Amino acid sequence: MDLSNIYTQMVLEESRNPKNRHDLEGATHEEPGHNPSCGDEITLQLKVKDGIIEDAAFSGQGCAISQASTSIMCDTIRGKSLEEGRELAQNFIGMINGSVTERKELKKLGDARAFESIKNLPARVKCAVLPWYTLEETVKDDK
Ligand SMILES: [Zn+2]
Image 1: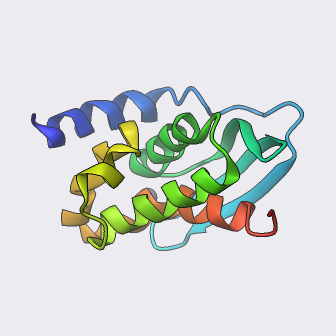
Image 2: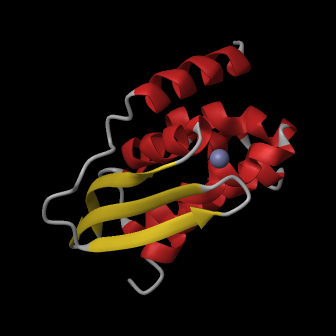
């Protein structure tokens, strides 16, 4: 499997028309995220009920990688519990910094695994992890 090729296709597709970039009706959580080194800005919105992330969307602007990573993250966390969301964030960040390499853990990330090769592009790492750090910040006060 040529991961870098899939990565390129997915990023291009998502960045042209991110399907999760819209205002989220009934949002319970909202958190801005900013990556000054590239100029990426996002606002993440979640709709959480009974500890489950029922829906996720975002607004913002920035490079293709940040926008695509945010949109794919919204797909990845939808329907997951807050606990699972936090775990996924740690897995994603770990995948990029190389501390998480177990196949079992990486598999949970689904399509977000497409960003694994970004660790070879140090200048773009912050773009890819921006939504995941923002997610951690968004839910930090929830039990
Ligand atoms: Zn960027």
